[in-house]
Length: 389
Image: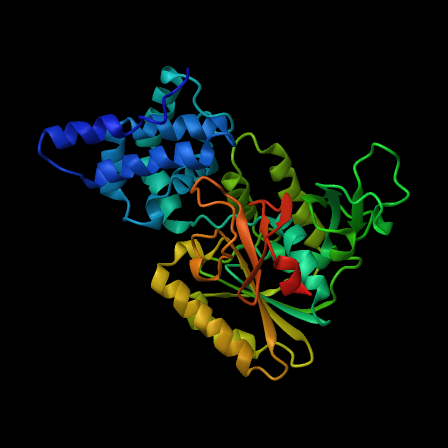
C-alpha cells in the first residue's frame, strides 16, 4: 500500500487548527516524522519511509511519543526505529507493508514501550560509517606525515583507522589518458586502488577527481583518539555492535556487511583512546596529548548537526585556536551538511535543497568537495582544486 507522505501529518495539523488548539507537541512531532519520511527515508529505505509516514498520520501514537520522550534528539525517528529493531520488534528488518502490519508493529511497540523508551534514553543516533574514510583519505594522505588523528563524535572509532582498510576509486567522468587509469581493459570502470589487497573490507567511491589527486598510499597514523558522549566498543561489547547494526536501515544490506567487515579489520589493532564527554569540554586536553612530532588532524563527519548553531560556532573557534596555538600547527577536516556550517560553505555550492544528503568536505574551513553520506562519492566543488594545491 502506498502512503501519501506529502500529506502525512497535515491532516492532524489542520484538525487542530480548526479546533482552535494550535500546534501541539504531538503535531510538531508528527511533522518531524513526515519530514523524515519524505526528505530522508524516501528512495533510500522503503520500510522506514512507509513506517514513519504512517506514524505521522497516527495522532494517538504521536501523543505517546511526544508525552514520554524529552523534546529534541530523543524524539528523532532514527532512535525509535533503531530501538524497536534492537529489541527484535515485529518486522524489524522489512518494516510494515500495509495497515494491518503497521497495526501489529504499533501494538508491539506500545506493549513494550517501557523497554523501547529505556533503549532510547540510553542510546544515541551514533551511526559509525567507516566508508567515509574513502572521502577523508585524499586529504589525510596529502598532509605532512605522520598523523595524530582526533575524531570528534567518534562513536565506535571505526573512522580512526583509515590505514586499516582498502579503497577503490572509480572514475565518474573521463580521465582515460591519465597514467594511473592506464593498463585497464577497454570498457571497464577506470579505477585507482590503495590499501592491502587482502583486507576484509573494501570501500568503493565514485569520483571526478583526477588520478593524481587521489591517494597513492595510506597515511601513517601514530596516534588515535576521539570524543563521544556515549563511546561504543563493537569489538569488546556485543550489545554495542548490535546497536550499530540496528542503526543501519532496512534495505541497506551492503552497508551492514561493510560495518561488520570494518569491525573485523580493526579487531586486532590497538583500540584508540575515546574519551566520554562533551566535544568542546574535552577537546583541549585531548588535543594537548597528541605527540608533538605528528601532524594533529581534528576531524568529524555528520556530527555538528546535533549542536545548536551557537555551539557550532564555539566549536569552530576552539578548533582554530587550538591548532593555531600548537607548535607546528595542525589541520581541521570537517565533513558536514552545508546547512550545518554555512559560514564555510562555498558560494558555488550547487544545492540548497534540504533533501540533498551530501556532505561538504572542508580542509581548515575551506570547502573542497561534496561527499556521499556513506562515503560512496567524492565530487569537487568549483575552484576547490586551487585551495588544495
